[in-house]
Amino acid sequence: MIGDLGAPELLVILLIVVLLFGAGRVGRLGKDLGTSLREFRSALRDSDTGSPESAATPSLAQSPEPAGVAAAQPVAATSDSGHVLIF
Image (cartoon, rainbow, N blue to C red):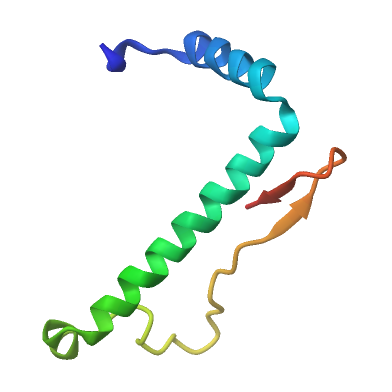
């Protein structure tokens, strides 16, 4: 049933959410969701480093990068409406 949702249906749902809560609150919800996901991933990474299995297998965060390759960092930009966009 959920798999039947297409782009038009999702747009209608998004429009209803924006009308009910306002664009500012929806933007804050998105920001809070992103922060929560970042903290969750960080907690998972921290719990992995404390387990005995992680000592045997190197994680990507601890492996050295090849020479000349920079780590991908998220880029944040602010839109005209004041919302933070992360690429």
